[in-house]
Image (tube, rainbow, N blue to C red; front, side, top):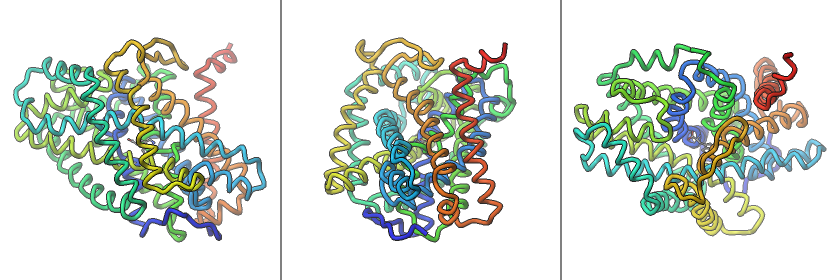
Length: 464
Ligand code: TRP
């Protein structure tokens, strides 16, 4: 199978650990924090439908491709693709498909750590009981005051980054694997508890209607791109993670089955998060289009008014921190692995170095929320108004780099790698292989290209 190449970083102990680690990478702030608020901003049902189609038709085939690249290349994303390009006797320029993922994950972590810091702060804030009976407007004011304070944001995100550096510095076995073995089961239990709790206390009617009754008049072309980009973001695709986690995957594990399972878990968590959050949004007369503060404003209000609210509020934010943390370690791993492979650095040093540089980059995010004049601006990027560095990093990665990176991965695996190699690595029945190959050669490239052409107005032009 993967022939003679070996990972210098070690391998996952077994199939389950890989599933936990990859699900840990996939399930994160994207599912619980971002999905509800972008769904709110883009009209609900129709957006959800497009998102689900993207997961099924594009997300799963691309995930299989990335794990395949990783397992066959056995190195960090850029070098794995380069190795396979050489194997395919193709131009080594294809390695850009891996590098863009590594860069995207680096940029994502520079805002991800800040939001994870919010979640950590809210664990303590909810535990203190301040939200009990607090007026709706006051909860919003408290949130706005918090994010406007750069020192608080720096302090909390520093804790997240430091923990990430600590765990990843310990290596695949003692660090990553051990962490996901504890945190993922805890996450599942907490999620189940939360779902039951809001099933008892929430009002599902409006939420279900909002999420599952498509109203296409509310969906813009830009909304379609955001749904596509979020499918990549949520599954951790085109951002190095699935390649590097695939690089540690033992040879005999089925890539197709595990990928489908990971995508199913990720989607289930996103749907559950929506069903837990929107009943409260509508129940308390809040706006679904609130933006990044959505869960930090709506949930404390709800928890402040429900039986055992403080306790479940604490559990909810702990769950969010766990989800974010298992993603943060995946976001830093590609860069660390690359430094170890090529710069001869020890893992601990490589992680610390990456962490410190990320800390500086995260200041751009912090000062975006604090509203510093140098961090705020106003321009339009592919149909979306961008107001600060946070929005720039978020939109540039999720909506531009990830779909285009995914396009290159699809082209590389579908058209450049010989069918013999991909077939050998996937090792599936002829039918499964054919379906995957059709999706990766045709559906992904055509979908991504059409969405972008549409966005820059090219299709408009041909309509007349
Ligand atoms: N999937 C993560 C989430 O939903 C975000 C993410 C995007 C990510 N790319 C990644 C996480 C790469 C780990 C690795 O929150």
